Image 1: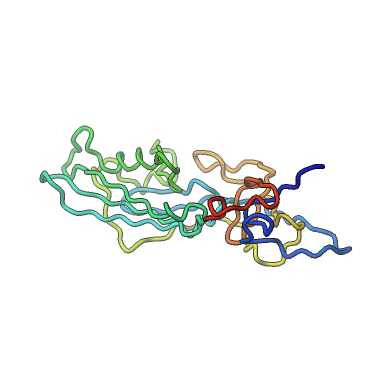
Image 2 (image 1 turned 90 degrees about the horizontal axis):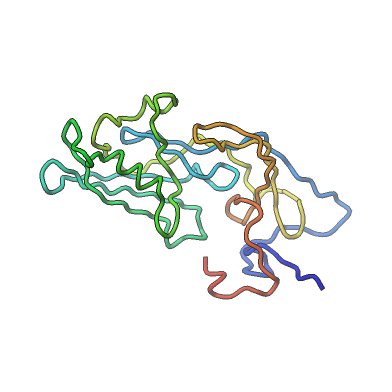
Length: 234
């Protein structure tokens, strides 16, 4: 007998979301969207972009905040940079990231004490346990965001309260009537922003609704009845 498998959120596993589906003669319809893109934000004299696109996360809801205070020794700043990905329910214990480092407030920058470049290196490298949901694209004097950056300066400017990312083309709310079967609520994506410079490419991909947000399909699958406190603790 073939073992039936389901996504983690299904009622037969963790029971946090199951498509509203009743078997009938009604034909299932896979809806499609032409394009999904990533979220962006110009803040603090530099530029941020979401790692995921609007087909695999609620990227417009990511918030950023930067607190800058005078450091020691004089001529440095203490920077606390916070990222909150409010819809990343599967990593709720890591939704707020705090990054602390010193940046040179003089000009020109001292070697190794360029705050903006340091922050870019931290974000783009990711954390040991979980990748950050945003990056800072490299400046190459060819991108539309280059004019907004201040990499010739040493310091990232404070911005608080938190500001939201935005501008991404996202999929419609998956809680509306989408009928694609008893196990998955799916949506088809024709093209997506995949390139490092914002290029749009053909992807012919699917996304699945987990009850809160769209995630990349297929998510991890589990056998029916495999739920456990460790597995389902989101």
